[in-house]
Length: 117
View 1 (cartoon, rainbow, N blue to C red):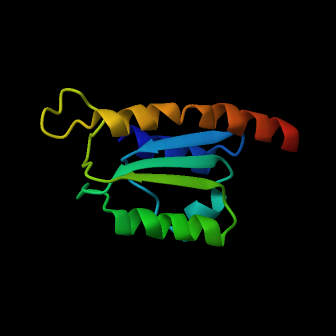
View 2: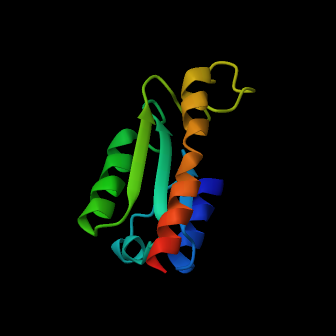
């Protein structure tokens, strides 16, 4: 839910530099995608039935078509909530470590936004 809310903020707040969606819902309305000025990082599992890779790739294709900044990571063998250690059957430590390493994304987005402004 948080990732979906982060994207909604990015749609409605043009000053936002970056947004991360952790296996959350993605916008499907073209008008909303066109409003996205923040860099978007999406982290998803290949086995997530709520946000399957085909939907994620469709969002990525739309973002690219409108020349929006998007970086998508889909982790093989990971389902929904793969970063949650309480998810005994679905927790994926390697995917989680990789996802956390993407925090550099925020620093890069901040630098880019300051260069553009």
